[in-house]
Length: 316
Image (cartoon, rainbow, N blue to C red; front, side, top):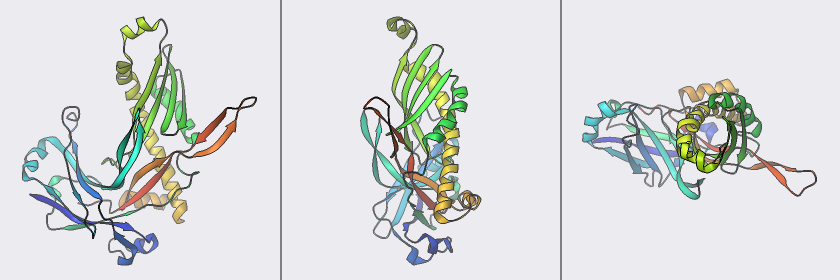
């Protein structure tokens, strides 16, 4: 049996903690009780459609301690199926509105850089720390930032026209391609991926395709679902890579301002000592525009994450 042991802590005084993150002041943090700590796995490329990546978990005790047990039998399949492992933790659940029904989603507070199974050390105790700074409604991703992504996204998707508008659970997309008008919502949610430069996952919901010609003829030719899989989803996946880069840069800037340090210094810390994860997303209304001559209003929103900074970046 393999073990990953340690304690999970919430940083209560970031200034004290940062004086020596490797051996922090014991008055700068407190234990997190009842959280879930996991060893997650990433499958080798090509296996994802056929197998579910295994994960192993434990719940933290009154002192924040955890002991994750990994069976010896896992070590036999790992070399052929598992690309790497990483540690993640969540504390409670969020309710995400993805599609018609609200879904419970983990409230992620920590994730580590990936590591190999061979690095597991049953005797070592690992101290994990997280800190959640507060971002205001005017921080995070703005409508202007989304607008700047439209032109490159339109080319990647191959659309003639493309627009995106932040709504209360993600981004509403409208595009025109090959004579068809496509509308859908891009539901956004935080991720605890082992790719530390990926912060958001997306799901296409409320897909509506208006094709040229009578519907009963065009629907026989190709279904909405096949169009989503073949044309829309690959383009959105490409766009999300750029969007995550933009999110990272924006959040580093906001966090740098919050702690009074230069952007490049904060980025250096994240690249060497810490990780950034989102606990949840908020979509606050930051501007209301009244349309002339009518009672209608347009609400402009921001995408504001609740960030969680995790130490250390590398567990093993």
